[in-house]
Amino acid sequence: MEVEGRPIDGTDDGYWQSLLQDIELTEARVPRPRIEEFTASSDGAAASPNLLDSAWQWAKDIFTRDESVEGIVMNFNRGGLLVRVACPNGGDLPGFVPASHMVGLTRWVTDQDRVGQLGGRIGEQLRLKVIELNREQNRFILSERLAMGRQKDGERLLQTIKIGDTIKGKVNHLTEFGAFVDLGGIDGLIHVSEISWERVNHPKDMLRLGQEVQVQVVSIDAPKRRIQLSVKRLRADPWIAAAQKYQVGQVIEGVITNVTDFGAFAKVDDGLEGLIHATELAEGDFLHPRSVVREGERVQARIVSIDSVRHRLALTLRSSRPVMG
Image 1 (cartoon, rainbow, N blue to C red):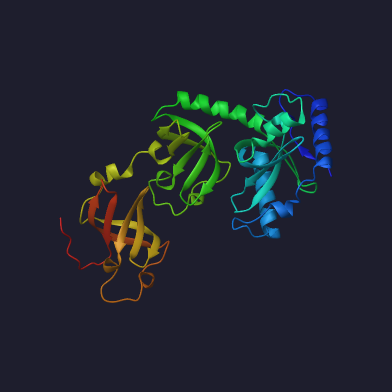
Image 2 (cartoon, helix red, strand yellow):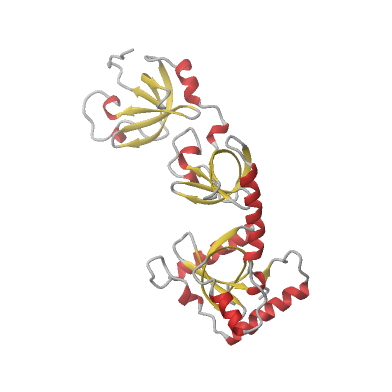
């Protein structure tokens, strides 16, 4: 099988071949753990085939997008470091960092020097770039040196950006609480509440991996390398105009977007949703709000109250309810 690989900046084919040969010689002397033994679920149980498939697919996606990963140094051999890379699905993937792709090493003269320098890295968390990936040969080769170049780019970015700046980035990870965006050597976080003026159930409903996005810088913590970002602040706050556009008692059209035990939400404008409390859905008794309205249904609702500061719009479907001004 042809090995998937990416040419290394500043090196020729001869260097790359010698590097791979060095790895082969190293692995011949010091057996590598089988990937099935190294990969495990977060609770330490043996990895299932599906977990392994997912881990390799994730590694392939990272490699294709030329992104960095975090790895913990678990052990070393004559040629470099054995690292454990945590995958988003809860599994771990073993990788190898050749000594020539480590940062800060001095050339060792004796085996004692080698053991001291490589062994001293055990337990460290490294920022790494994938330089070779081959599942059939269980090869997951990484470089600290190449990732460090991007880290320096990140340091420069931290020194130049300011709160309020608008910059571009690429979505590289989605979680329930937000989306991480690669800004060029450093990641920023778009909290789920900063993705849209509309209610967002999960970031994946609005964003996708690899998507390029324009964001505004909300906060910067340089010592902790944390940058908070926002997408919605690049658009006008619809709630500012809501108080002038709508009035209490006005009848407006909306589309039901979500039905819960306590009521239903209706979208009345871009970025503007109102709540129809369960007591405001209909006259009389009913089992559940879903027995009155359903998602996607268009309704005529009357405005009960508007609070632009707290971003709250109360609506009613009850025709006989008196509206207080």
